[in-house]
Image (cartoon, rainbow, N blue to C red; front, side, top):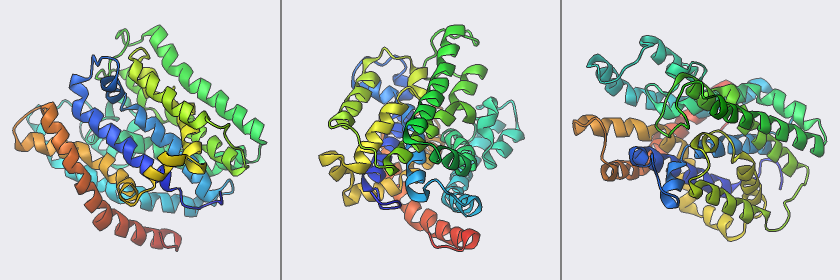
Length: 360
């Protein structure tokens, strides 16, 4: 697979991951005690962010290799993220300001939380991480990953495939050890946290860029291994996908472990499989409709919660009933496509041309 060649199956996969997050946010209040099966899979929607982090590392290695010129890379990443990031924040801003003025939303950091979100630093400060536009916390992590990527790619790419694999495995084990230690020590006194719980230590473990860096490293290592010609044993990709679904559906794996990277190696195997072969599933994900939806997945991810907030404001509700939330989530898909075509794509090209001298 030549470096930089299109990876259409992974583009389609991005839409499925974003849709999983939308369904999770739409139904989260009724998924707290989800029974094993499809409901438990929906309740594991936060694990789709782990998939995004793994995908990010894998795709960046595929596009840039391990010798990365930092400044052009950072300029291209800024052009990719910034327009829709700030557009989504502007969409959420009026509702958030009114909710704070009326005392509906408590924000102990006050204006500082808005400044942190606007600058992409919120994930470093647990009380600010989920303010204004909650899904944007993961973009705060991505900014940190992008800052490190030129160095990470160079250091790991200079190692043998075996050494890179060992480094990725070690970093992943450290990442999983953090939520395991949290569950053992229980510093917030929550017992086993539920998907709706928030607390200082819990948010630090779930949302901190340092705590989530292992997911990205797993993706980088997977990308490097594929670049060296490594191939999966036959049947391993489908087996990893089946095991991922089984673990998510079982209802026995603590939500914090699903949230925090337990599935990252399985996701990496699935990503490698779909990128290199993938069979009928890869062909399905590569169809034209899923390509467009995959390209719009970033817009869907960032815009769906602000749209939920506007729907709540317009219907004078503090929470959307599940059915109405799903309807709004479905409407967010065409809105995201339009935002991608009319806002994200042209602004990305314009910014990239000025920051890097290249066309997007």
